[in-house]
Length: 148
Image 1: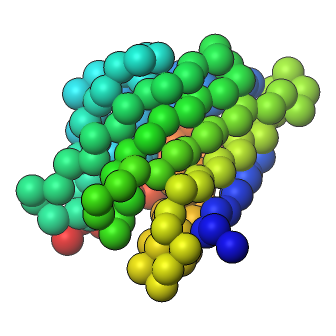
Image 2: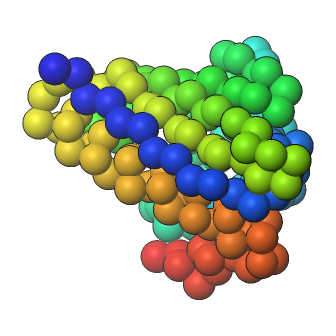
């Protein structure tokens, strides 16, 4: 069995607002990453820095697919090193004022380190979505003050 997970959360904002908050680096830095080298664009690689990670850690994110207001697919380094995992984000319209964000990540090796990393990332992506919800619905950054 290969490690994989899926998490989802309803965001009480139109899908266009939610999608923009993920692809736009200025907005993404308001709730998720400390810095980003650019917007998420199909075929482009960007670097994400996290305040909670060691100062020298930068995640290399390679965007494979962008379907405007619907889907983002990218790869990035696994926590166990040496290979990349695949992240798929789906943005589903529930009604004009609400959308469901669903994140799936796959590609870890089926060993103890791969399973441990996948469980950690499942929690990390759920945290990201809670921060996204707080940012869009209430204008607050839940990650503020959370740095090492």
